Image (cartoon, rainbow, N blue to C red; front, side, top):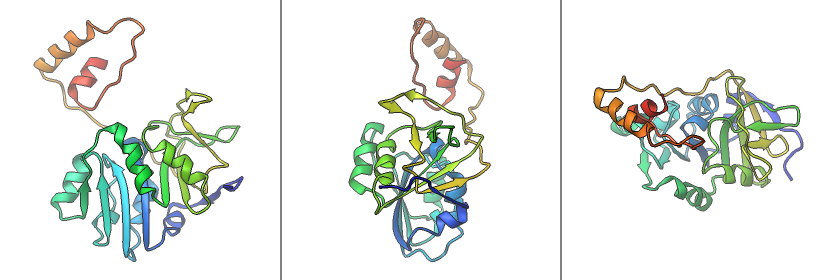
Length: 227
């Protein structure tokens, strides 16, 4: 069983818990634990570290280490920059629903995520990301042979999900290592929309009914529609 109370560690101490030959799973973009990932870059002893993630939002020198391989399911600007600089970055073509079975198949020994600090009942909300990595986060937390690292910051808002079946949270009883940081969520900034993009957004807004639920993507048009 996982410990009732996780160890409070600095990001550097948490990074030191990985073996020189190890595997790490991180969520997409807004769920990535920035201080922990950056602290991994402070080590130079990697022999074979494999990192699985998508849409990288944290730049760390760990990705430039010759013995570190990062496999991404969604190439963003940082993946392209690392690839062009000669880093060992691979791409696994898949849509979002296939990220879950991909993580299940690789079963990284270490899973890490960002979250809001624990509430009075010990729940750490998964905040701005509760996607394909959630199942594997719970599995890592329940497996004594694996490690679950959760970086919490007051800057991350709480989201509820649909408790109890789909609560967007990890309980302290699942977490092995708790890293406290002051990091803020990564903010994607969109360019000013063009007249054409505004026209598309205006048309799309007319077909959104009262009470509808919107799922938006990244870019000028989704942001213009939401505006």
